[in-house]
Length: 185
Image (cartoon, rainbow, N blue to C red):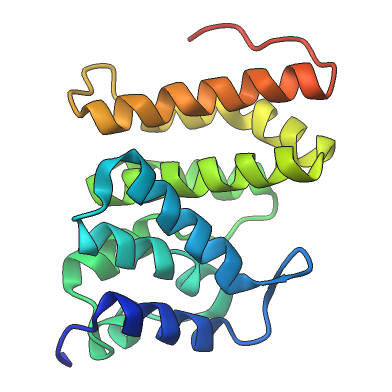
């Protein structure tokens, strides 16, 4: 394994690896930075491992990067495994992919935190853009997402706050898009 990259080096490497991939009409690094910013906002500012994982969270799924390549470029095995844990497994539909993926995410504590950061960043973006169809997609899968990833005895206040924020974003979207409120879990 190479020497660990700094956070700045990680951001640059991930941007290069995503190449010309877009997040809507923006460079993909916009999304990666947004996911990392969520981690910082919810109390993970000093956790460089989580922040690096936020930056690299889509590389396996979107760019075919392997855990071996991650390791040879300075990611620890813990970080590479967390990135793998949030990477969708193959499947014919989104729901099939989520049914295969979320159990491995749940088994990886860091992966769960990064997945929550990703979900918050995506929800905030689609609300800002007024993207009703994406919001409805997240609402449809929320019960299963929550069942798989929300630990009933969660003790980390940062993670509890993330779940509360997701609930608030879904409620905000219901108002914004004139949809019924979701039932409480």
